View 1 (cartoon, one colour):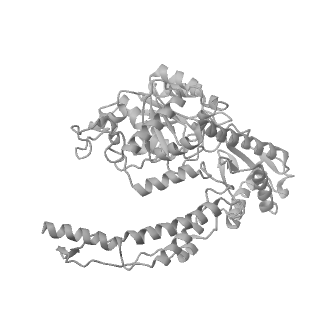
View 2 (spheres, helix red, strand yellow; view 1 turned 120 degrees about the horizontal axis):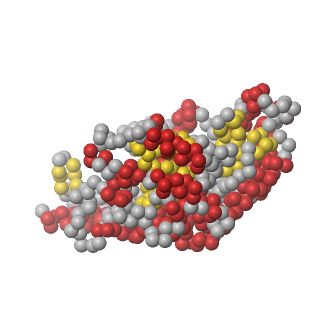
View 3 (tube, rainbow, N blue to C red; view 1 turned 30 degrees about the horizontal axis):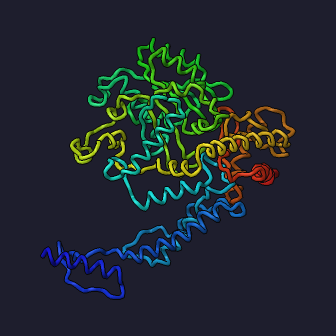
Amino acid sequence: MVQHMREEKTSDVQSLADPGHPVKCSPVIIDNVPLNGPTLNVLVSENFIHQSMSIIVEDAIKKATDVREKVCEWRSPEQLKELLDLELRDGAESESEILQRFKDAIRYSVKTTHPRFFNQLYAGMDPYSMVASFIIEALKPSLYTYEVAPVFTLVEEAVLKKMMELIGWKDGGDGIFNAGGSMSNMYAVNLARYRCCPDIKENGLSAAPHLVMFTSQECHYSISKAAALLGIGTKNVYAIPSDERGKMIPSALEEQILSAKSEGAVPFMVNATAGTTVLGAFDPIDEIADICEKHNLWLHVDACWGGAALVSSKHKHLLKGIHRADSVAWNPHKMLMACLQCSAFMVRDKTSLLQRCHSARASYLFQQDKFYDVSYDTGDKSVQCSRKPDAFKIWLMWKALGSRELEQRVDRALAMARYLAQEIKQREGFRLLMEPEYANICFWYIPPSLRNLPDGPELWGKLHKVAPVIKERMMKKGSMMVGYQPHGEKANFFRMIIISPQVSRQDMDFVLDEIHNLGKDL
């Protein structure tokens, strides 16, 4: 039987390698299932992949980055459901049908790599990072043990080391890539809590003190989500007032820390933001660090958006004091343009705090008697099990471009933001919310019909309705994508995010012209 199975395997391999000369043999039957070698025809698969890659290059890369093409081809959910035929059936579709599905998915998706996509904190296309993503998907690795991902384990270590050097941790630290900045911020809350109350890991919250944490009112919503998920509770997240530029006020922070202590609460963490989502503000890290040291609080810096300024000698001052943080979140998939997702969480601690906090010691993965150095089995630092080697996306790009080119990208993006701000100030009907500190440009468009109204409730009430209408029109036209939002008591305004080196001054001028054309009748 063993010999028969060996012959059968050889025959099947020959059959797939040479479809014109199949070799017949008797299958082995197990549970009424014939086991007659591989059922995947490698040649057919390769042919499909080649055709698919041609479509990707033509439709998802060339056309998607062509300024003459649409940013999106808008359809309502009901229309899109009909166009895509989303139902899953028992029978298989033909290869030609599948390729058409492929084309349709690209056609009706938003082209976030388009030069006129300014809607989110990511944009543009880097070819090296894209190829790195292709390699990851082709190899299908999972990053938990060195034995299954040796190359990617070492790549992650190298990238984290470089990022920690830029933060200013001369003695290094620890870290891990994970599934997004929200996850990184959750890690920070969990580690801060573990350092404060390590027994919670085993005993739970029942015997825990009344823990409270502090963050700017401008912080990312993931901080409150982390508090909810970890059982701290959103009411125990103290929102510290910010100044007119969106920066946390340190004196207000200390006041609330003292107030919380006087009420019997146990402060354990402060979250500072380096690059807020809307205004692009940078909290004064040095001053906040002084307060954290005084009160023995964990300082986390959410630099998911603003961390890229660390690669620029011209702009790294925005994060002055970040080397004093206990932990840092930084997303290379934002300003540095690595493919999604690419998110790093780093801690200054070198006592394996990250592993002690998260480890579960799964014996089927993390055996201690392996034949190699098990310190390279990094998976127990993560709350995930399966984990993509996302660091490879920034590593290959960094190798291809070098630090100098990355610095030039950041400098150019911020210079382009300054150009747009200057143009806004010079154009009738446009009003800048504030001078940009980073790559967030916030402004109002005031239609001709509202320009003679005095500042007051009537103007701002009517202006609040303008941006949503212009956004709808630009989406349905497909000309560009720019986000809008209210902020506190301020009426809806546009928030432009500039990242991609594909963006030109002509694109900036186009955005302002297009907003006027789409909204001048309002």
